[in-house]
Image 1 (cartoon, rainbow, N blue to C red):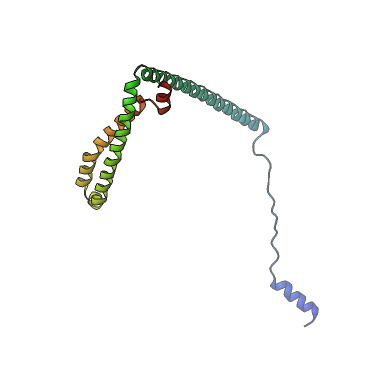
Image 2 (cartoon, one colour):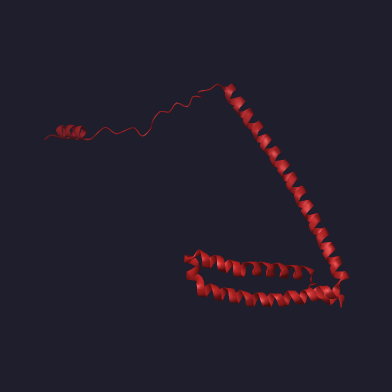
Length: 163
């Protein structure tokens, strides 16, 4: 075979190379006026969103100031009560500490009960309800009482400064 025949046969067996580039039409389909109107609408919507966000921030600031004032007033009243009743405040602290120890013992009994009856509680709704009825209200009330005593008690620094 001659060189010319070889070149012709090679060119016939290879497919023509595909173009890596294509032509894309990027002309706008709408007129510049429509685009300007859309941009104006978008700007107006963003201004409305910004105004709503500003109003939300104002409301949140008002809410924080009201809550802070309420908290400050409550703290002042509690401080006045502690100053007016120093012995009772100290007794509340002792009661809170003792109830905390009782709570620890109670929690140990509850966890032991859970260890003993976990399988029964997971398979039987009656056992779960029995457990919750037996321990739930007492634990909730105990937690509430500890919280009240702790709030009414004088902190250790307060007691030392009063003595």
